[in-house]
Length: 169
Image (cartoon, rainbow, N blue to C red):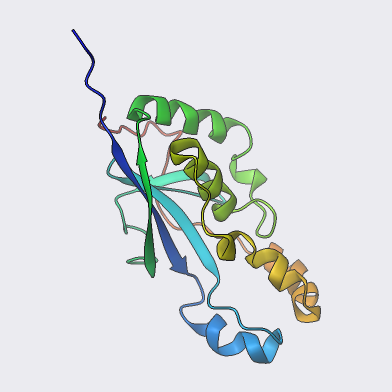
């Protein structure tokens, strides 16, 4: 009997952590326009997956304290099964994406979203998101703020995937 393949839609949820403040204040503070301070997550198999100070977590789509996303990018479809995806996330959560590996500028939610997007669809997330840290750090104010910003722990509430997250395939 032939196995029926099923395709799952993959979406990138994009949130502005500054809630519009970056757009207003960046020209004054950084000398360049930033449209937002981006937090991203991947929505697939009916859940939203993201990386923060507690490692990889999940919640129902739009279910973090951040509320609904500012925008949603359709990344396409994946043939990867939910079971293979969860195995992949577990291995990431035990290696490169443990909570203590989180770094606001170098290894953050957007790094995670970009890696997962490529695993599922072969596509990267938009470069304006992944380039944001280097844009901020290229300014004198960004360099001055770096030690303060790096001490901030960003963790929208969700269930950590290591704690027995059950997902329907």
